[in-house]
Amino acid sequence: MKKVFTRPKTLKDVAYHYCPGCTHGIAHRLIAEVIDELGIQNTTIGMTSVGCSVFTMEYFDMDMVQASHGRAPAVATGIKRVLPDRIIFTYQGDGDLAAIGTGEFVHAAARGENITVIFINNAVYGMTGGQMAPTTLMGQVTKTTPFGRSKEVNGFPVKVCEMLTPLEGAAYLARVSVHSPKSIIQAKKVIKKSFEVQMEGLGFSLVEVLSTCPTNWGLSPLESVKWLEDNMIPYYPLGEFKKPGVLA
Amino acid sequence: MTRLLMKGTDAIGEAAVRAGCRYFFGYPITPQSELTHYLARRLPEVGGLYLQAESEVASINMVYGAAGAGARVMTASSGPGISLMQEGFSYMAGAELPCVAVNLMRGGPGLGNIAPSQADYFQATKGGGHGDYHMIVLAPNSVQEILDYTQKAFDLADQYRNPVMVMADGIMAQMMEPVELEEERNIELPAKPWAATGMAYHQGRNVINSCYVIPEEMEVVNLRLEKKYQQIRQNEPLCDSYLLEGAEIVLVAFGTASRLCRSVVDKARQRGIPVGMIRPITLWPFPYDFIEDIAGRVKWMLAVEMNMGQMQEDVQLAVKGKIPVYHYGRLGGMVPVARDILEEVVKLYNGGALR
Ligand SMILES: Cc1ncc(C[n+]2csc(CCOP(=O)(O)OP(=O)(O)O)c2C)c(N)n1
Ligand code: SF4
Ligand SMILES: [Mg+2]
Image (cartoon, rainbow over all chains, first blue to last red; front, side, top):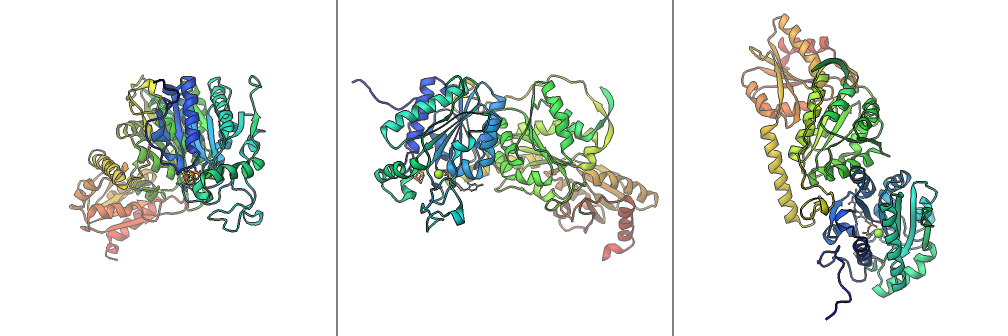
């Protein structure tokens, strides 16, 4: 029998711990497929962060380093400066990157650190049980915004790609989504580009992936992808925000 | 061997370079800054990197990454910055990563001041970060010792796969003293087959991690670490002593305070007061056994520190209640004066010890 679909080489044959309908797994698969296609499994080192994705160190079949909450871009900097010919990526949630880790990702971008950041924006703190994230939408109900996020108490959601765009060190910035087959195909293309930018030595690349958290959104998997499409994409428009000249 | 005058901060930097350290990540703070000025020039000369991070939090995490990639790496700071690094030290101890961190202590708490102090003793020796872990802590008291022990710190870090701290203060940082500098030689760094360098570069898959969600597994790791700490407690305590023969009274002091105490011992002896000194060089592991042994032969001890009595507690633990352990300290960046320490010794000797 001909095999037409199989597990990427870079993903280990273990079951994810993610909740049903969580799109973290899709993002993992896309990264693994890209790494397979680029043939860099043995020269890539991945950084896991603190959040639901902390166990990616057990999912990716490559060397992995677990970073403390928010600091993956600093840890990645340390590795990349020692091993400049290796491919280094971080995988970070929105609480990890855009709240506690704001200093680290902004300065990694400013330095033009030649690493790739995969940023999973699910508009909530997944692992700790559904608290407000810096990316939680206005009016969105979470465990710590029981009456909805309000500008008086919580201010406004952080748009990471837009915020990094003016930084000269940021070479490639894009936002994708994984709510539909079409968006997933596009997401893979963009993730591949972000790794290629690093392989070319062009500087800092970041891909923001709009992702679901059915458990903490209190929605079914199907309702979740619809909610993402209807609510997140209007606020967080998809597209490439910045490309190095050679890619433009 | 060359004999030359060297400043404390330069000695730290030069020792690091000679120990094969090629990476420094740090953030400016007084009195550490002159060390970074030295390394920012020196490291590129040997193909290394000095990188100024956006904070001490980022610094220690860059150190974590570089150490995870197998490099000899260091950072340095002072009180407030060292406080910010504590989570990182805990992660490094948990993931068993080697690094050297220098704390040039200053007056505190809070922003305090930039004057010399020894008030970070508890933080360094009792685990300033979270979880069951220890850092090896070295306290040199001369520029020569800064040179020697900073190099040793890198060896200990690699040998035990654990962060090592070198503790000094602004006086030691600024001080210039003659040192014997050995010829630079090519040192062979230990292999690190566990480092995350990419699977093409080693057998199997390497994961640098301190996360064990299953308590049973975490406990196994804790026990493994404790075994290592036990080995360190057995093999690494270091201390120096001065005029313990015939001593009835022993001053215990480290770093800057120990330099003053040496002259106090001399002056007291001139007056016929039988004083000696013990100088812990490793603050963790603390030389409990050596101090306990001496405690059996003397009347009392006096811990002299630039803090409110932090090491005093370890001396008390060491003597196991056999003899009294008093404390003399100056605080807030004030440096004790030998005359005042001597006065305290005389007072205690003349019966004040019964207070
Ligand atoms: C210093 C520190 N503060 C807080 C935490 C607790 N914590 C663990 S995961 C997390 C939030 C993660 O949310 P996010 O980054 O959005 O990832 P997600 O789980 O949503 O994928 C927090 C606050 C921690 N581990 N360390
Ligand atoms: S809590 Fe949310 S982000 Fe975490 S695994 Fe479940 S669905 Fe995914
Ligand atoms: Mg999240």
